[in-house]
Amino acid sequence: MDDRGLRLDGVCAGYPARRGHGERRVLDGLDATAAPGALTVLIGPNGAGKSTLLRTMAGLQPALDGRVLIDGAAIESVPASELARRLAVVLTERDLPALLTARELAGLGRHPHTGFTGRLSAADGEIVTWALEAVHAVHLADRPVTELSDGERQRVLVARALAQQPSAILLDEPTAFLDVTSRVALMGLLRRLARERGLAVVVSTHDLELALRVADRIWLLAPGGLLHAGTPEELTARGVIGAAFDGDDLSFDPASGVFVLQTGSGGRVRVTADDIHRPLLERALAREGWRTAAVRRTGEAAVRSARCDAGADSGADSGAGPGPDGEAVELAVRRTGNGYVAAFDGDVIRFATIPELAAWSRHAADTLRETPPTLRPATPLTVSGAVSDVSTVGGYFELGIGEVEAGWRPLTDLFTDTGVLEKRIADVAERLNTTETRVAASILFQGIAARLWSPPLGAAIAHDLLIDLDPGRIHWQAAPSGPLPLRATGLDGWQVRDPARVTERLHHTVVTGLLEPLAAAFQAVVKIAPGLLWGNAASALAGTVRTLARVRPERSDTAVTLGRELLDLGPLRDTGELAEPAPGHPFFVRRSCCLYYRLPGGGKCGDCALIAPGTRHEQWARAIRESQGAR
Ligand SMILES: Nc1ncnc2c1ncn2[C@@H]1O[C@H](COP(=O)(O)OP(=O)(O)OP(=O)(O)O)[C@@H](O)[C@H]1O
Image (cartoon, rainbow, N blue to C red; front, side, top):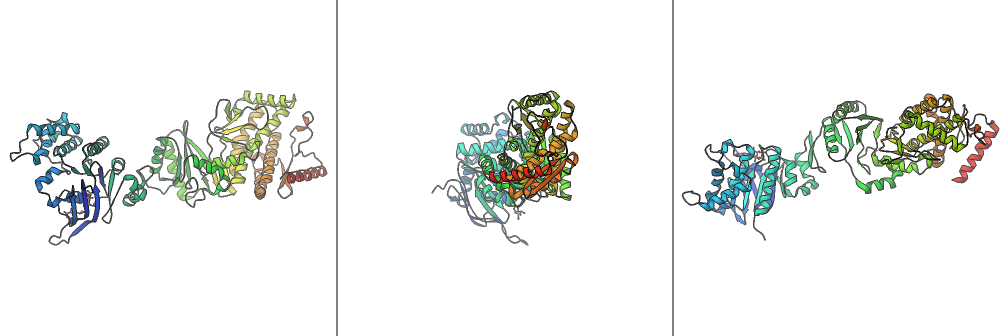
C-alpha cells in the first residue's frame, strides 16, 4: 500500500477538558487521505472545524483520538526536526516581523535544514530563489514583507513553505484576504505545485465555487462533525454540498456549481438564452425573487421525444413536478436578437435591457404573490410539439418553427406595406381569372384569416395550449397558390388551466393582434365593406372549427363552444350563426356576402345566407355523409 501523503486514521479532533470545561470533540472518527500530487481542499461552514483539523494534522494540537500519519508514520512519533522538514504549515499570519524582506521570510523555510547557526548556505540560497520563482515573487525579494499586498505576502508565505522542501503542505485559508484574480492564481499555483512536485497539499477555504473548480479532492466538513471526501463532482452528485451550505437565502445549484440567491417567493422562471446571457438573466431575476425552474431533459433527445409524445404531452406543465421537459413555471423569459421577451399570465412583454426586464419582473412577482396567474407559460418543447402535431391536420394548420431564410417576410408587412398587399391581391385576381379586385381581395382575406385561425385554434382545442402568434415573429412567404406558408421564429405558449380565458386570449391574439390590422390594410387598398371582411373572418373561423370537430371528434363540443364564443366578440358579432345540425358537425350561416358568386363559375359559397333552407339542409346532410365516409 502507498503510504505517502497525509492520512487521517479514526481522528477525533477537538479540545481536551480544561478547568470548568469538558472535553470538546469537534470532529470524530475521520478517515481520509490527502494523496501526494493532489490538491485537497477543505471546506465547511463556519465553526465546522477546518482550523481545528489543520492544526491537528500539523501536530500543533494533539488528536483526541486516532492518528494523523505522514508518509505512513504517526506525526507524534516523528521527531520535531524531521516533521519540520516533511510538513510545511501556512497559517493565517498577518503579523509578520517588520524588518524581514520577502527573501528573508522565504529563507525561514530553510531553517529545519540549516545547522545550529541557522545560516543559509549558497545551496540554501538557491533553493530560496527557486521557491520565490515558483510563486512568481522574485521581483519582491528585497521588499519588506510588511509593505507587501495581501496577495504578494501569501505568495511569499507559500515560498517559505516550498523552501522547506516538504512532502506535504497545510494552508489555512490562504485566500481569505485576496481579490478574485489573486485567489484563483494562488489556488492554481497550489495545484500546479502539488502536481509538479508530487506534494500533498491540503488547503482550507470559504470560497466554495473556486474549491469546486480547482480541487482534485474535496474534504467537506459537514455539520455534525462528519467528513465527506471525494471529487467535487462526486460530492455534488451526492447532494452533500447543498445539504451542508444551503440556507434560507442561498442554495447550491448542482448544474452550474454556483450558489444562487433564494429569495424564491416570486415564482418560478424559465430562461431561454445562449451563452453568458442565461446565467446573467437568471441572476438578475433571482434578485427580484424568481427561482429558476428545474429542467429535466435537454438536447436533441428531448426535442425528439417531445415531438413524439406531443399528443400526450399537454400536461407537461401540470405543476406536479418536472414534466418531460421541465418544471412548471409562472414566467418564461427569452433572449431575442434585439432584447428580451417575457411571457407572463398570457401576456408577452418586450424589453430592450436586463434592468428594464428586472424592474418589471419585481412587479410581476408582487402580482403573483397576490393572485396566481391562470395561464402558465408552456415550455418551448411543449409548444413546438403541439404546433408540429397540429400542422399535420392540413395545409391551413401548418406552422413551421425556426429561423427564416431569404424570401420570408414578417406578417406585419402585410399590414403596413400597401404595395405588398396590392401585389398579393393582383396575384389572386390573376389566378382566379377575375378583373374584380374586390372579389380577389375578399377571397384573399378569407384565406389569410383561415390561415391565422387554424394553428392557434388547433393548439387550443387539441392540446389545451394557447400560442401567441406575434405578427413580428410570424413570417410568410409568397406562394403561387394554396395556404399562405407561415413560419414562427420563436413561439410563446401557455398551458390552459382556465377555459374561460381561452376565448378572450384567442380573440386578443387573432382578432385584435392580426385580423383587425389586416382588415384595415385591405380597406386602405380596396374599397370593401367591413361587414364583408368580418363575415369572411367568421366564415374562416367556422371552417377551422368544422375541421377540428372532424379530426378531433372527442373535442368537437369544445371546438363548437369556443367557435360560438369567439363569434360573439368584437367585430365578429352578428356576422352569422354557427349551427350544428348533427352533433360534431357545425355549419356556418353567414349574413354578409363574400362575393364568391362573382367569380367565373363561382356559384354560392357553402356558408351563403342566400341558400334556401331546404337546399342548405340537403347540403349539410351530404357534407356530413361525406365526412363520415372520409373518416
Ligand atoms: N481553543 C478552543 N477551545 C475550545 N473550542 C474551540 C477552540 N478553538 C475553536 N473552538 C471551537 O471548535 C469549533 C471549530 O472551530 P474552528 O475554528 O476549527 O472552525 P472553522 O471551521 O475553522 O471555522 P471558521 O470557518 O469560522 O474559521 C468551533 O465551535 C469553535 O468554537
